[in-house]
Length: 203
Image (cartoon, rainbow, N blue to C red; front, top):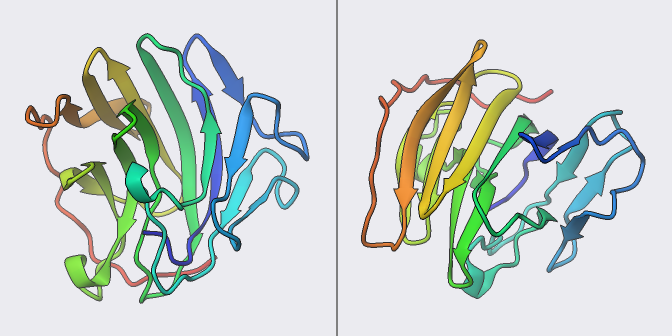
């Protein structure tokens, strides 16, 4: 559920396409999907970034296909294997927010897998900042990693029925975990980070 995050985003895919968001409007391959009014996409606030502003909602925003009313920046993926990478920064959120910002894939029309920042004071504690979560529908927090200060580079890779989440540490990509479909088959790999406590901040 999104409440009030704002983010800058840079996306790319190895060997396929690269998007630097340098134009004031979205290219034809992108689609900004806003099922309910409120969320905004700004390409002019900072050159080379796409800024997503999500206002509070009493009932939140759903990421699940059966109730998919969360805003989404969408680009069609190839039918075969793929990998998408992005640099993302959560700029501002309140200490009572509940949100998830995810690189998402849809193995079939009835489910999804997502990888990205997750924040929920009721689940993580009021003094705990956001973590990185790998989630598939019905199974949150399959794998977790600490959310660093400032921009974070993430990747989600599809190979057959396996979706693998990565975070970049320095110049190296580290595998954090995997979601394997069908839903009954889930494999988690890679070490789980020790989380850091920090109060929410704004920039």
